Image (cartoon, rainbow, N blue to C red; front, side):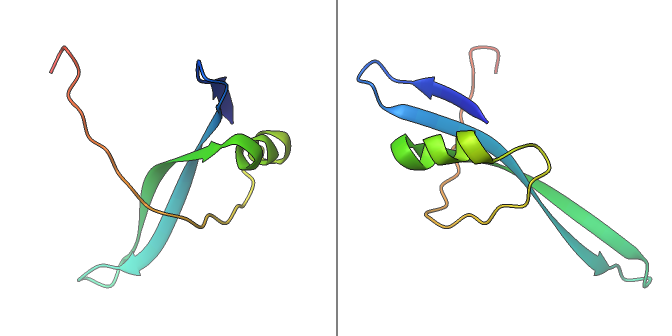
Length: 75
């Protein structure tokens, strides 16, 4: 987990989460599809994540899903 703090003192913890689903394609071959999600936690929940979550750990996430897109200065 990556922990940072805002100027106002709010703790923000970010962690990447992969979800993988398996399926069979039209020819009957087994395929997998992996999606990556960036999870952001604040204050106490973030501290708990930072203290207890390690790479490869299974976690359950509940909360609101919100994806943001942006264009940087290089397009």
